[in-house]
Image 1: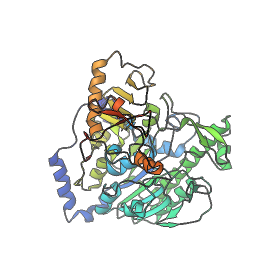
Image 2: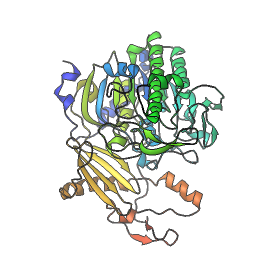
Image 3: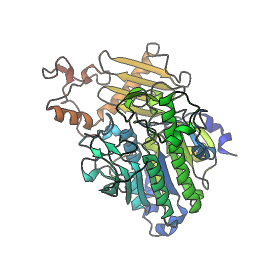
Image 4: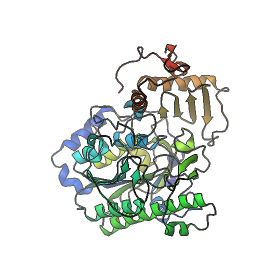
Amino acid sequence: MTIASSPARRRGGIAGKPANALVFALVAAITACPFLPAQAAQRPHIVYLMPDDLGWQDLGYLGKEIRTPNIDRIADGAVRLNQFYVQPHSSQTRAAVMTGRYPFRYGLQTQSILPQSTYGLPVEERTLAQALKESGYRTAFVGKWQLGHAQPGFWPLRRGFDHFYGTLAGGVDHFTRRGDNGPDWYRQDKPVKETGYDTALIGKEAASVVAGHDPSKPLFLFVSFNAPAAPLQAPREFLDRNAHIGDEIRRTYAGMVSALDDAVGQILAALQKKGMLEDTLLVFHSDNGGAVAHKFPTGDGDLAVAAADNGPYRDGAGSVYEGGVRVPALVKWPRGLEAGVTNALIHVTDLYPTLLAQAGAGLDQRKPLDGIDQWPVIKEGKLGTRKDVPLTVEDLRASIRSGDWKLVVYSTLPSRTELYDIPHDPAEEDNAAERNPQLVQELLRKLTDFAWEMAPSRHLEDLARARKRDLPTVWGANPLRHGATARTDSRNDPSLTVERADRPQGAR
């Protein structure tokens, strides 16, 4: 029986809980055994490929306009995760991957980490790279980091990676690699000057990491592309490859996707040449949906409407609607998986325990995980155990996918509450909140539980320090926080703020 033919592949997830303490203890005991390093060659290499702001329909196997033969090669033999959710912003998704924990638990729920930000992924958070390195993996990060750049303690080499090549802050010019803070291109922890297009440089470096690796030792290679995110820039050869696209902006975006696909092809070729491809567990997904209906710099001072295509889904990058948080995702392991499709609910935090389990790495850590090991779903087509996916919990908005339903809450005045039946309304056009008041209250209670565990937003704290005053919040008007006491703050008048004295101390 193939995975594709399994009935479980065509059903969504059901209610359940993360793996129990016994499983955790057994995994920890196995990884502590002294004979594990001798078995390293039996564990998969892990290559994690993450584009930036890639639209749902901007891959060859899902659309027709942009050809992506190399990514299609991955899709042909992969398990496709049809209901895979990420965070609205890139730093949040990267943090969720690296920790297996929801970003609101450690203050990264608002915005991405910007060039002017002083914070990063808290150093007390254990990363996927640290866990794999402790288990005997060689670890390398190539591309866009965006998990903190203001101090070296946030940088990749101090978060579990043996090798780093790329940009710390992100948002750089694709040709000059200059961002708001000036040049931003590093090898290890030293700035480097190189010529070329960043997507090509990232592909070349990742292939070089593979070429120089000893296959007898497991490799964890995280490749985080800047493409196809703004600024919209592509070399002439990739523009010519997409000459059939009439709109200039869309053609430039498509050229960036083509360059991305070429870089992926370089990495696959390096794995094949090294004899590692069959033993490599490949993960591919975007950090969030494609950017649409926003204006971004093109690189020459002009502004252009972003040109991603999120297919049937509403909105895009930065949004909690499907176009912003639901992305194409692939998991492929030639020696360990059959091709298939699953419609189970899977969140990006789930990849942390899922990959660690396949790597034989320990899950014993100080902070509890939110992610669930989804390998039985991915490999065997079993029913999903995840029922709820909190898409974001912030000061001004929150959203949760629970079973077939999705609740979206905005606290900005005027506040609004939206409820969508995703299987029957994937475009989120029919707000069913007024017709389902009990369900709305049930999902609000779930969001309220998460809201009590939310750490203060590091982004908002940064802004408050920069402006030397508190920023307004609207928790008092937020249906998530029925027990909050609102007050008017003259410094922020006429905004509504909330006293925090009733808030429990210490997020998970």
